[in-house]
Length: 334
Ligand code: ADP
Image 1 (cartoon, helix red, strand yellow):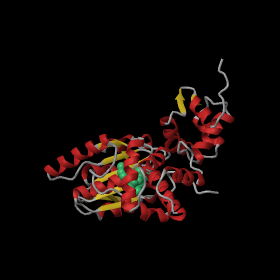
Image 2: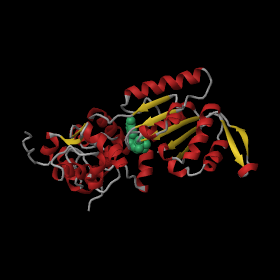
Image 3: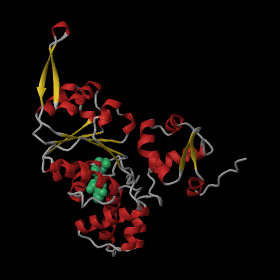
Image 4: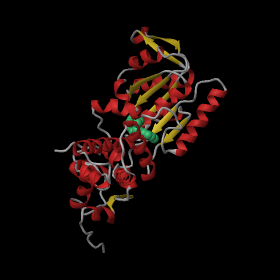
């Protein structure tokens, strides 16, 4: 089986170093997301003019769109160190207390998948975000007391694929929420040509176009496809032209729309088992053996954006374009 090149959620260990090498280091280098860039720029500049730590920032959006990269940029632009952790790694309030109490003044704390943090830690985080203070509980039962602990001022950058899952008190404590959008093909072309330059290999403009159109609106996937295309050029000693790109992507089973295996399973399920819908999210999720959260946060946003699925009050519906994509004809709806 070919590896699932277009799944934005999976990141192999070996890919991390590669991703790191291609990461933009400043807002100016960061391609696309113009609105978010402008908003962040203003927020960082104002904070620096007033000599204070920038407000806490929540980055929301599907995987692979640049949330981790932006957190690194926030640290670089403010000239402060960055500490990285993730929601699933914070299973007890104590994990968080240890981290918070060791932060340097102005440090940027990045919490990926912040919606998966333990509840008890969430409550500690509210106070920390608001007052740069935590209460540490000592002892148990009637003899328990809490000891207040002052923290150095810091900027929390939280990332989530599901902003809707965050409890309101947590969401409210972010000074700014950035909603990252899928990249359009022109933006992905910029991501790819930049990456090709950094990787030091030549590729034609129309080859870049093909990769961009099959990257699922996601820079992570664009970079990944570029890497496979580079391998292909190398092995086949081909020049960086379009036909070689087509052959390389064909070899790896990359869909013409950039759909990954799960995208296709969901669409086919919707069409074949439910006659195109409407069908409820959880029924659809069960039919492909995935949890609803993944379907809603990872799969569906792109399918909706690509015009393949529409959300109706009665459930999810496959559009005509979805039927056409699989060369199936939509039954007449009476
Ligand atoms: P996320 O945290 O949202 O899953 P990452 O920040 O890890 O996504 O980005 C994945 C990869 O895509 C990284 O290698 C990064 O260099 C690249 N990337 C993401 N956004 C951009 C962008 N706007 N410009 C250039 N490269 C980007």
